[in-house]
Amino acid sequence: MNKADCTGNLIIVSGPSGAGKSALVTGVLRSLPQLRFSISYTTRLPRGTETHGVEYFFVDRQEFQNLIEKGEFLEWAEVHGNFYGTSSRFVDDILKNGEDVILDIDVQGARTIRQKRSDATAVFILPPSFQVLRERLECRRLDDGLVIEQRLKRACKEIRHFKEYDYLIVNDNLGSSIDELKSVVSSARCRIAVRIESAKSILATFGGVDAEDPR
Ligand code: ADP
Ligand code: 5GP
Image (cartoon, rainbow, N blue to C red):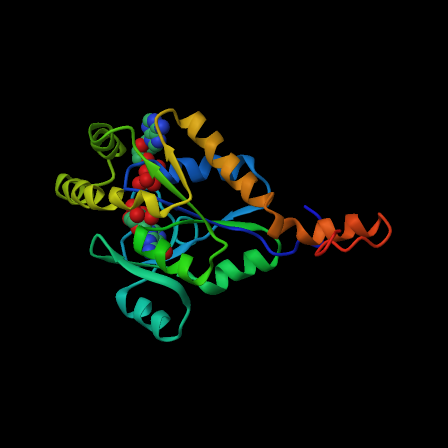
């Protein structure tokens, strides 16, 4: 990236629980430089090996409420009976540093962010089928039966929103889906609006051609 292009891209990933968002995001973060994960705040308890400050900032309801009142969230929503919120400061610091940021958030949060940041790129992740989604949630062994049923019920509602997104990835083969998500991030980086400052400095080497009006 040219030094002049100093604002990063905001990439939103949504999809039903168990569709593979974390697996895809982890795969992409491992292989693409200058891309960071937006660590959300949540009132949900840590699952398995989840660690405060890695997957989420785990806080209690009172602390979450204080953060809402202080205006710390770019968006927040109630999902599966818990609160989740994206920190404005966390995201802005990454973007100002010229790095891209990837958000794993639900459809309500995606909608709120797209109203505020029309340049955000939004990707919806679908599992290959309902049955596969159920198997993935069961194999993950992180939720009990009742929670899995709640997540599947919610999935039936969430998937109806896929058309609100720019891109759709059907996460069947994990490697191919990671490649597709990497391509989306790469495409976002190539947009004219993002590359305009690079273009201007290159065009300047051609003897003062104006990149805004290059006739
Ligand atoms: P989400 O973040 O959307 O809730 P996860 O990334 O936790 O979903 O994935 C749910 C489970 O499915 C995990 O055990 C994960 O390893 C597995 N998984 C994800 N993608 C695939 C895939 N393409 N093929 C097989 N298993 C997958
Ligand atoms: P989980 O509990 O499985 O980690 O996440 C449950 C849901 O909450 C997922 O759909 C995930 O995308 C969403 N989520 C995680 N963080 C945020 C956030 O900051 N804001 C919103 N709106 N949703 C979030």
